[in-house]
Length: 281
Length: 297
Image 1 (cartoon, chains in turn brown, red):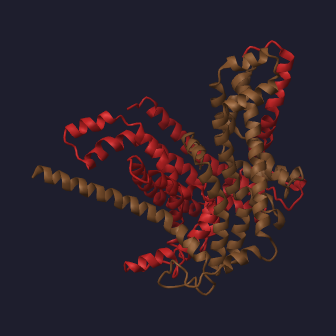
Image 2 (spheres, rainbow over the protein chains, first blue to last red; image 1 turned 45 degrees about the vertical axis):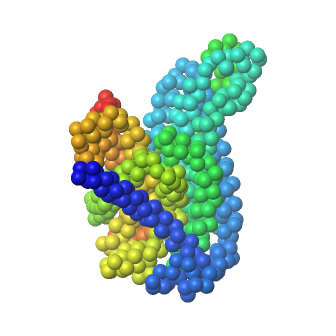
Image 3 (cartoon, helix red, strand yellow; image 1 turned 90 degrees about the vertical axis):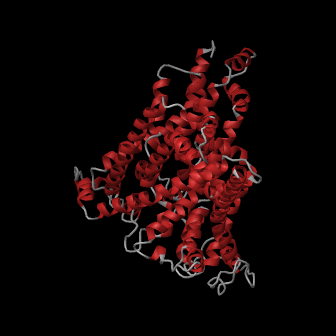
C-alpha cells in the first residue's frame, strides 16, 4: 500500500513538473509564433477568428512592404545598427580594458581613489545623465552624428570593473618576464594581457554589442535624420505608421530579432558567462 | 608589477587611462553637475542659453505640487505592485525547473532566454498585437475558455496590466537564472536531512528552499524596484503614456518634457527627483546586503 502511494506520488509530481514546463515554454514561445505567423499573412488575412496559425495563403507582402517603405530604408537602418553597435562595442570595450589594465597592474598614487570614483558613477542611472549629455553633444555640435552617439560609450565604469577583476587574477610573472625580454607596456597589454583575459573580453564584447543593438532611447534622441536612424528606432517609427497593418509590423519585428538571435545562438557560451557576471539585462 | 622604466610607465599609464577618464569626466561627472545646475533654471532648448534664468526650487516645487506627479507615482507603483509578485512567481517556477536535469534542458534554457535578448522595441511591437482587443492572441485564447478579455492597451484600467504582462514575459528568463544560481548554492545535505525526517516536496520548498534563497529574492525585489522606476521603452512603444495619460511614468515624462517640449530645466529636476527615489531604494539594497553578507547557508 505504502509502496503504491509513493509511486502514485512520483507520477503526480512528474506530471506536475512537465505541466509547468509546458506552460512556461508555451507562454514564452506563443508570442514569437504569433509574430512569425502574422508576418506571413496578407493584409486581409491577419484579422481572423479563430486564430489561423498556418496562413491559408502564405504571403510575403509584409516583408515586401518593409523593404519598400516610403522615406527610409530598412536595410539602411540595419546597416546603421550594425556599424554603430560594432563601433560602440569597440569604444566601450577598448577604453575599459585599457583603463582596467592600469587599475589592475600599474597602480599609481591615487589610483585607488580614482577607481572608487568609477564605482560611485555606476550608481548614477543613465536617466540623470541623459538630458545633460544631450546638451553637451549639442554644444559640441555632435547631435545627429554617429560620433555623438558613440562617444558616451567611452564612459564604461561597469566594463572597467569587470575587466579589472579579471586582469587582477593574471600572474605578474608573465608580465614581468615579457618586460625582461624587452616588450613595451603596449605590447604586454595587447599580446599577453588581452589574450589571458580572453573569456571575460569576449563576454564583454558580446554584452556590449547586444546592449547597443537593442538600445532605443539614446539613438532616438541623438540621431534625428531618417537615413541615420537605427533599426530599433525605425521599428519604433513603423509602429506609428502601420497601426492597422500588423503583418508589416510583425515582418519588421522578425527582421529586427533575427540578427541578434543568430548572434545569441552562436555565442551562447559567452552570454551564459555574462549572466553569471551579472551583466546582461 | 616590477617595472624599472619609470618614465615609460608614466606615459603608458596616461595613454591607457585617457580615453576612459575623458569619457567618465565628460559624459558622466560633468553631466551630473550640469544636470544639478539646470534643474534650478528655466533652461529652454529653443531659447539661447544666455536667456536662461535661475528659478531656485521652482521646478521642483512645480513638479512635486502639480497634479501630474501623484498620478505618475501611482502608475509606477501600480506597475511595481503587479509586476513584482508575478516576476517572483514566474522566475521561481522557471528556476525550479532549470534546477532539475531532464532531456531538453539546454533547449529549454535557450527558449526561455530568447525574450531577454529580444529588444524592447520588438517585444513591445509584438505584444501590442498580442494584446489587441478583438483579434489579439491573448483575447482569442481567453475567448476559447469563455472569458471576454478587456481592450488592454486601449483601456485606462487594463493598459498598465498589459504592459506588465509583456514585461514579465520579457524578464522572467533573466531573473530565473539569478534564482537558479541561488538554488544551486543550497547545500544538498538540508534536503537529505529533510527527507529522512519525512518532509514532502511542498514542505521542503517552504521550509528549506524559500528561506535559503530569500536573500536573492530580496535582491530581486530591490533591483526590480530600481528598474521599475525607470520603465520606459515598453511604455513609450505600447501606450505612449496613454490612453488618456493612464500610463504616464517617470522616464516617459522626462523624455516628453526634454525632447518634445524642450524644457530642459524641468526635465532635469524631474530626473533628480527620480534619482532621489532610486537612491532611497539603492540605499535599502545596500543596507539589506549588509544584513545578509554573513547570512551564509
